Image (cartoon, helix red, strand yellow):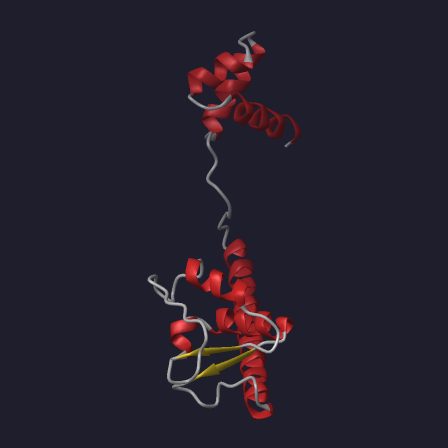
Length: 164
């Protein structure tokens, strides 16, 4: 109020939660030339990515962002915009490193024989039993009931078994 804010928004949920009603309501109310003033940046967003997403949204609207506790966080000044741009670059670099490390780890795991994705519903023995049952005249739906799986799961297993 001392800073001259015309409208106040208070959030009851943690800043760590991205889906916050008061945040969405506030962002919907912001118009061109408005300035979003926060007490501290960690009250607005807990991650750099979320903060930069919000800052970018404000920029697209033509609004600014200022923090009372962090005077360097002021997108209404050229220096503040530069610092936020540097943070955005660092965050992008960090995301690229994470992506690179994840891919390297995933490739190494695959080379060690690690299988990704959901576990198979049917074992090789169950699939072999299903093949035998169906070849002996049991319907796929009845065989699926015996194996306690969905008939679509069994159809896929039979198709893989046929082609593989």
